[in-house]
Image (cartoon, rainbow, N blue to C red):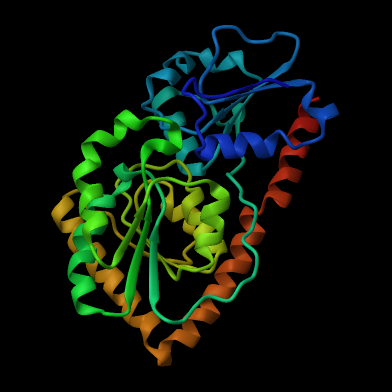
Length: 310
């Protein structure tokens, strides 16, 4: 099997994580397929069944060649959410019968006990997904609450695009200069998984249309109280288990809405009278997330798809 990935050097994003998981399926089964992730190569292997896994938005120019029947170059298209699939049906005319939805998946976070000395918030994604709004909302919250800490893991190092960090250097400096914020550049998924065990709230005012969200899946699996917008596929991903709020197009109003929701989450988690109930809800969230998004189950679905195509 040939896995076709982005041409960028050594990316470590969600696409690469999912490609790696799919590559763990039985080799004797994978050998019959050419599975392409997002970027379509100039030549396809006509001796194998061809699958295109679409991780990106319908507006990406790389997908223009799927118009007007161009999708027929593949035996099957795999979408990572129903929201994404509907977009491609509406704008590129891809029939439902040519595709299937196999959502992204994670390795569930192990059971763990969280520290209780303070309330820790975390953001771990690239900066263009709302990091500036998070900083605007967190500044007044850090003055109101003395028991909170924000941990940020964000840069385009994740995709080996250091030049994309340049517009955010000023924001990074502000984060570094805040006494209640720990700023770090992007780190490996292994490090993030350990950090999630130490944090309590995911602060994620997403302003980017995500076709799927491994950030949210892992945070839910780690038992975090997740505060995030309702943009794109996030409602589908969250399964109504989170503190989601309605996305607003205006950045200032979005920041105000996010601030209010994040403040409510901090108050609820800080209050001993409500914390026990929250922890009970988060236990349910963790169990459902691991069941729905765990790779073991999704791997079986992938095997079923490949076998059915043979």
